Image (tube, rainbow over all chains, first blue to last red; front, side, top):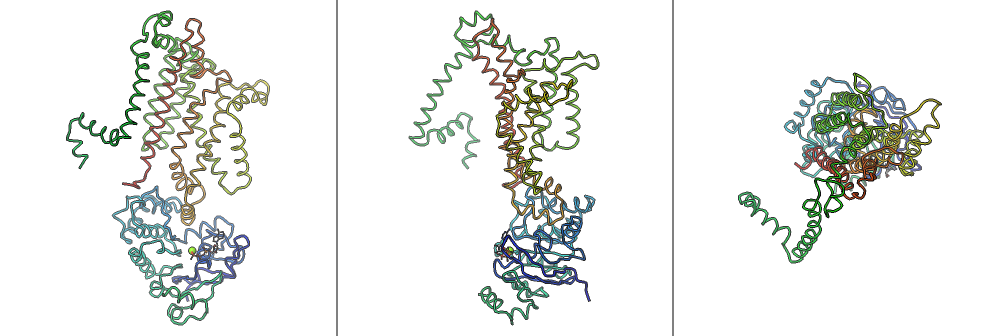
Length: 245
Length: 359
Ligand SMILES: Nc1ncnc2c1ncn2[C@@H]1O[C@H](COP(=O)(O)OP(=O)(O)OP(=O)(O)O)[C@@H](O)[C@H]1O
Ligand SMILES: [Mg+2]
């Protein structure tokens, strides 16, 4: 039996009066790959952003790797070192070269010696097939390349968990595959992954579990085969029929 | 293709092609060009006549009054006073070498690749050296009291320290205003709005008149220093607003990416946000700096003799009454040289920090 690495208990969140997350519960074990889907506005982004405290929840409990997320800055720091995040719009640092984008956090947050950080960054760039662009600026890369750099940047911190918020939905169709390939590789290596995506092919290929969210609740969770072929909930059926056509 | 042809031809032909393309391409364009050229000639002609052909370069005030051109003798005669004010005549080598040192060091520091900690130390040493040169009183250099300082060195001093301090203070104020510590935020907003709400003249006035009232008996604060503090306070508020504009232009995603990577507040600001925000606001920053450089002339109100004040004083010399056009043209030219250099430099910095976005 593997360890539980993320424990979410009865999490509730409000934006003013608006109840975004309603009693969300989830346990993720080490190495588990989870795909989160659901209609727009259902709270998927809000939920995974709560996991590294980019958003604050008001009620309930989130434990990452045994550390409870709260106002304590030290705890938050530890959590963020262990949790990598990839955004829809890449959010690369435009004023830094690709290599500097990767080495910045290891050098400043983890105090890794410069040379060591560079060496590891180059290895990762090699892995995502961007090493020849190491000294360019983000403005000179294509969307797909940027997103691969963004993944490498997160991996530079040697995270235990990776969060992805629609990593391919801002990409031109022909670039989606190069990014998904990197994510599939990552999944094969046993990374714990939570991924908000509507790429059902990806979900079928690597996910251990698909989570369907609607109106701030987790409505259904099941293995991909089960979820796609035999959805239980009305809303899931509706959603699937919409995205499959 | 076109460029190749241009390069292979003689310079005159290049000019001809350029003129045809840019000045005389259409009838309307041609008409506008001709009008502008006529205007230029009718203004510039008499001006050059006045400044060069009819001007008086040697002689007395009387010669000047009889001639119809510019009185260059006046500038020659008053040059030392306009530039250096009441600094003792026999000691002029000190402000001269100070300014040469200062300006050459500015020139040397303008390369972004030289911006590091060592440069800061060098500047500190240079400032101490210049202070020693100007103030004297050590190593057998005769002391010169602060109220003798004037002219261009004073203008440069007020502007330089004004910028040097107000830029970082402005950044801190802007960060405070955008931050989420309520008390600090309110303090920052109050400060900025109060300072921006009053003219600099009144601030200078308060600095010279009211400030001493708050000091304990017996402690005096040189007027120069009081003016300097007022200028720094004033500039900081404006710089803060300029920087805030840059901060607001930074995408929220940059903050989130920095947070997600575990950077703390200062690392995030220093490594990610500020480099981008400050770059965006280079033009308004330089714009504000140029404005402030010229605004230092307001210190006349508290009787400091900056460049503009020495010019005015020179004009009051009974022997040389009536040459204000020459005098103001002369200081105008000095101001222009500095302001224009700043403006050029701003363009250069912008290009330097374009991060290969368009290459
Ligand atoms: N900062 C905010 N303030 C107020 N409401 C917000 C804020 N951020 C999100 N919301 C609202 O919360 C709800 C959930 O947003 P969220 O971004 O989590 O949805 P999502 O499932 O990721 O949708 P999408 O598929 O469009 O990305 C939406 O209705 C949104 O309008
Ligand atoms: Mg979303």
